Image (tube, rainbow, N blue to C red; front, top):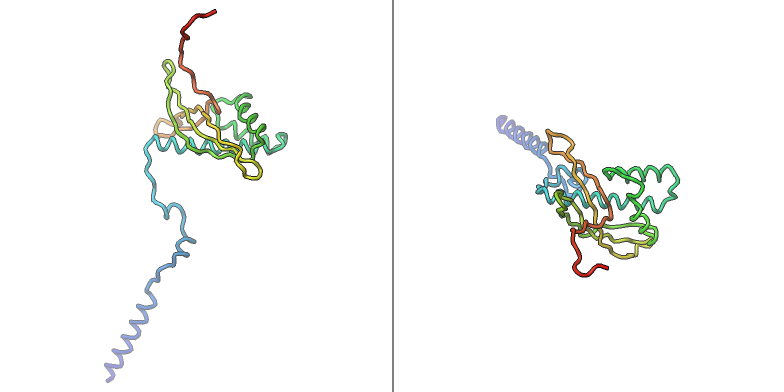
Length: 192
């Protein structure tokens, strides 16, 4: 009888021990609360053209966001000068005419926000050079979030290698809201 009692006590203690050590499944809410992007989402593999397209769209949107902030500011404060210097950092060799067309257009339409749609990158061949362009639609919105229209734009960009060991590139715009280079052509007919 003593053996049976000891066996029952041992079985009960073993059951309690196993029950206490059993890991409980976390609820979906706990999983979401404690997750981050590196664990939640698998890495997406992109080919080089998809990566360039994605980076270009991101850079165009960032520059437009900074431009709308600058246009809607006073343009004479330290914050505005910081925004302007940030905008210049997106360009390989910025000058005073770099933003003139874009800012003038945004001013005339009284743009508050802008959104990039349908961006595609392409190459043009001019003489012996290959020029990289991004063709996109930009939709402007006013202060009431009403669309002011969608406009087709071009931007010329360049990717510069930052190191020889790694395949890292730095993205710069050469011209924003540019017109693609026209092919050399001669007109046919009588010249006066």
